[in-house]
Length: 116
Image (cartoon, rainbow, N blue to C red):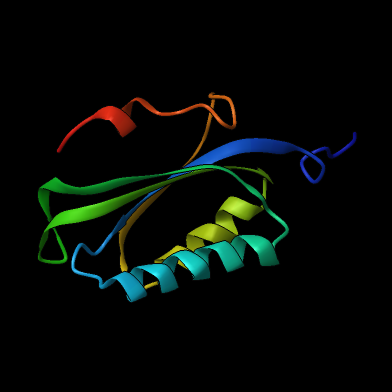
């Protein structure tokens, strides 16, 4: 029996909720560290959106609002676990969700046109 999981690539997407009170330079530092993590693992980001600051349904770490970031990328099956570990230990990330996507790599999301 052959093991193809090493060679398989899938489209994944992650939504990250970031602290809303970060200064511009802190936000740039966070974005560049995420980009650097993707680069170090030879993963290219296919599509990204900044959904802005939105109200949360319930407080997360005493924050009632969060800045939402969306990233869609192609990777092997091992990378989402690495990304999970990276985001868990980032203090500026309140929550995140990584899922396998059924959408095209560069397809826009309906959320981009919505208001808060």
